[in-house]
Length: 321
Ligand SMILES: [Zn+2]
Image (cartoon, rainbow, N blue to C red):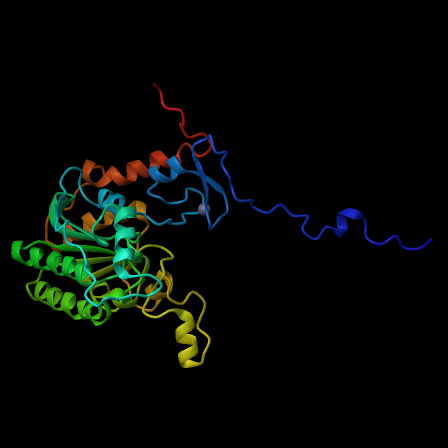
């Protein structure tokens, strides 16, 4: 009897369950998303309660700027600055579309004039000047207005004798503003040098991704540099570097973990611990008595995190009327 060949189920090379994209029916709200790291479905509400961190594998999703500020700052203490500042098209720049059209689209999408939010706010009872990139606005790119925002954060901190905190998430300089965007590197660093000369602390928080002219200027000059886990941090892209130096790069190059191993960042802090860590560091810098761990100011973020982790399988999705 001739060999009949492989049986039918052995012929199926792809007889393995693969994660399929979740498509919600059109008439139901979009409740789930899939974690790109562990491929598990996660309820969006659960993700939001957990500061956009996957409860299964600790993957840090991107967090938008308002949520980030709400996470870091004490509730109801934020006083925003320079919200009306917006870039203009100084060079008449056109790439695949004119710069003014890109600006208009980004403003419509984010409801913001440019890619940065700055505010005066309390962090664990310590008044600070805080700034945060909005990556949704043209990839958090730094043009004249973002550079001015960052400069003013440092100048206000110097004027009032306060610490400064900047959370970076940026693709680098804004190419549509050419050399004007590159000048922001020197301008922000000069303002920061005056702040540091006065002995005032600046904590830089690097999130995914922090690259280009932002990584090459003030974001790497913090008195303390804190990074989120697995964030991409670097100046040029890995492919460009490989082509330039003609060598292959080590695994994990330009991640937070690699930079910590090589002394470029001081600590990697998970998002759930970020606020508590900032409070502790600020109070140490300013020689203030430390707060107890159960102080409501410190434990707020941890409490929200614990709350989010408990209902792993059955989050309370149906709200009472
Ligand atoms: Zn995950």
